[in-house]
Amino acid sequence: MLALKKSDAIVDQLFILPSAQRRGLGKLLLGQAMKEMPNGFTLRTAAANAGARAFYEKIGLKLLSVGKHPRDGYAVCFYGWKVR
Image (cartoon, rainbow, N blue to C red; front, top):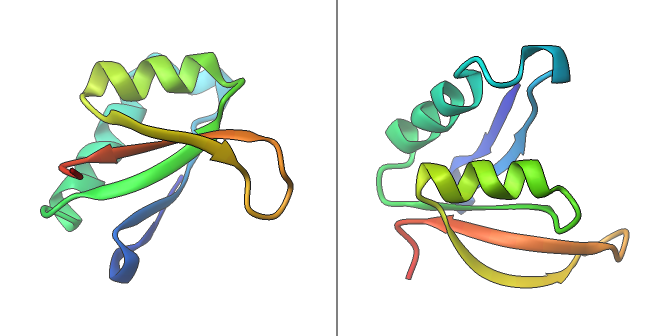
């Protein structure tokens, strides 16, 4: 599942069922986000989600910062594509 906030250049949600991971679906969905937001975007993921973090970095997203989830307070990592 992919949910975009194009007006804010944010990948709001990206989920792949665990049973469907490592089949290229995440790459396909991020590719769609790149097509729909060619000037760049940001996203966040739980800092504890090592698999997602490794995937984003492998795809070429850059770690921008580490902070707290705005509502729940747990540690999150903010990533960007074409964001300076």
